[in-house]
Amino acid sequence: MNDNFYPSVTWGVPVSDSNVPLLSSIQRDQSFTTWLVAINQATSETVVLRTIRWRMQLHIQVDPENPLGQRAVLKEPVAQEQPQILGKNEPIPPNAMVKPNANDAQVLMWRPKKGDPVVVIPPKY
Image (cartoon, one colour):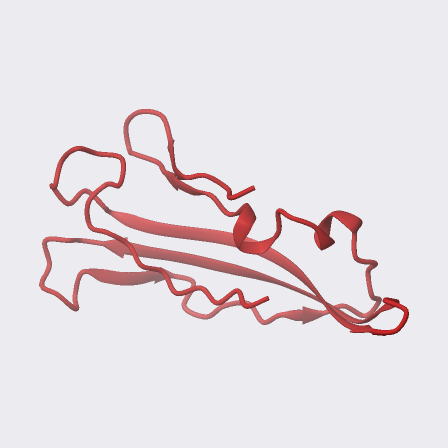
């Protein structure tokens, strides 16, 4: 699985009929648990070698009125927390081995300053 995060965001609101740029910030707060495993190809036995946990946070303030290259400013965090290799491995839960997982379970929400949140991209499952 390749789960690189390369955001691409439109200036308009994806659920609006207007072309007026309304995007004011981008926020992401996501926790991950990942297992480094060895799999016996002959028996399909899985052995957990390491359990790794980390959190990815992102808050970008956006001003679409600024010149290109100056529209987005990283507000926090200045540095990401380092991944933690747990001292004791955790077992892989059975539901982590089937869909939805990773990108299939992510949802993009539009949360306007006024009104209810809107699901822009639902999960793929």
